[in-house]
Image (cartoon, rainbow, N blue to C red):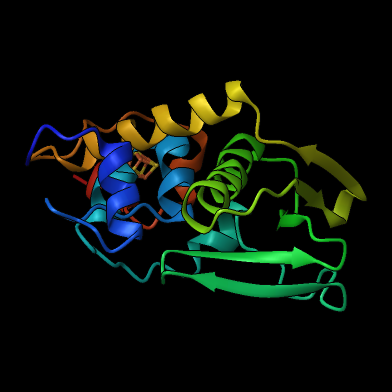
Length: 184
Ligand code: SF4
């Protein structure tokens, strides 16, 4: 791979101006970057394992019915898929407060992508319908830096020739790659 900053490479790819290797980051890759970098590496190799619906077990499954009358699905570049509320805010729905940090980074990434690729500045809201809680999420200088650091971090992980070592964490039991990490 070339020495081009991964953030610039991602932007060039999104603008169909990839003079070097293309580089795309999806929302779920951002989630995995926070949850488990080994999981991110497996995902980047398109290793799919049907172990039940781990997203539902883990609680990261997006509730398709919550606020369904108030949001529209928007897909951009086959890379990000967002929900836009009637008031224009981008919403990410989580059924519980568990794993809120991955969901927040995913939402911030969507806001960053909209600003830098689409040229639209939006606010976000992280919703927890089962807990009747909402959290405003905004793109600031600080959160933009966080997103760009994560983009570079994702690039560094998936460029590796082998996955990071397994480290036991609560989400392992609901992970599709559990048997890769913990079965003898
Ligand atoms: S089982 Fe645990 S260590 Fe292995 S990929 Fe999944 S979350 Fe990561």
